[in-house]
Image (tube, rainbow, N blue to C red; front, side):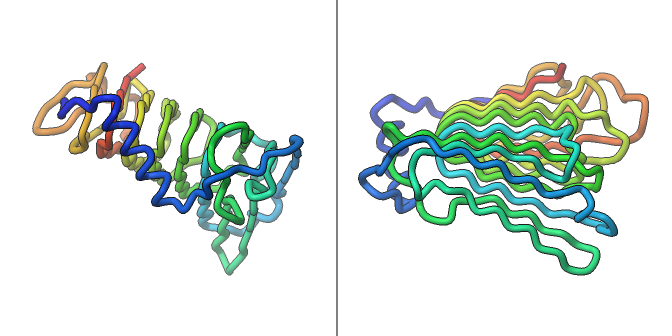
Length: 241
């Protein structure tokens, strides 16, 4: 599936407009690197039937993975006060809500350094929302206890690994941004739709029928990864491995 090509000048203009819409200040105030580690203990998820997590990332390098011993283990490195992360964990009855965001609008790109390394665990089914900003994002969901996932891509490069061991249905929605995104999915148990956007969507390793893509193999269980991709400006590659 392909759309209209975007030339360099037009793409640059679109990036500038997007950043302007995010109220990014015109100058940065970068200084020395600061590092913070934040841990939310697994015990705080006890009794929860549902956990919602939101990651709102502005610019820099974002890494998200699973396998944490606790509910969340995160390391943040930044060199501008406005990039200090804000982590909130709310408990209400059988629900928990985790939010990671910037407290203030980030400074403009340049000599600013901003790195988030977030590891998730705890074993409780997770509804996860990620808003990627400008920069590079590496998202490895293979050991994240996902139930639902929504990703809004930003400006730059994103690689997302959704090669999950499916023992229950997982719904994943990906909304395109500006740049390139590669999404890895398992060879079995995938149902996918991909549409829209100004750019290109490639689907590799899945079969197409009735307006959607699906795995050639049915899989060992009835569980499915239900993937919905909406294109943006740039390229999205869905690859089954």
